[in-house]
Image 1 (cartoon, one colour):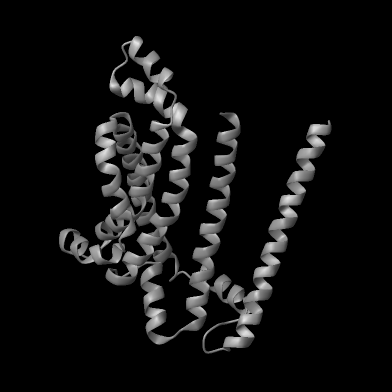
Image 2 (cartoon, one colour):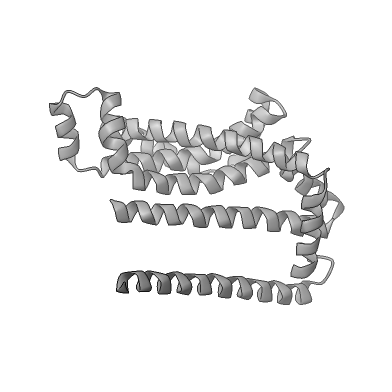
Length: 255
């Protein structure tokens, strides 16, 4: 009973902290509006009202669908491909030591400079959006997966070899369960940067999507649409990241 009460109290405290943080952000937003003026910003109330109208608009939904489809496809490729390749590199230590500085260097450079190459290879459209989103997300997943496998206790791997497991069976039954909490950290980071890459690709080479709308709004200085799209993207990323963090903490506690 005391444990249940403590958990409820902890949950209430976290909820109160979230509410306080949201209230603080809204106050800061309102203050910034009074400083910058209507030319640069809209108030929180105006932005929320405009966002509600935008979500109810039938013309807006195809843009959401386009971005969502590209993002989900890119995320799936980044998570599956990054996890498998990262685990293989972590399992084969020499290959991992060679690949790690290359991956870190690739992740540190601005991806925008690679976008012209992606356009030449995939052309303008969904394929380029998926490729650019995947490029952002796959590297952190690979790095975290590789690090997670390296941190596994050697006795697990030795036990698998004693049982004469194949490399694939060893990864599936031993390495993945042991390394999954750390891999999931890479998944959480990959989620955010994949979304960023997908929206950025739509800003520079797409005829539909949230990034396309944002680029057009910037061109005509449509402050209401800019603020509304920013609110939608930030809210979605924050809610999704919070849910992933909750799952991540639970995985670490279970381990």
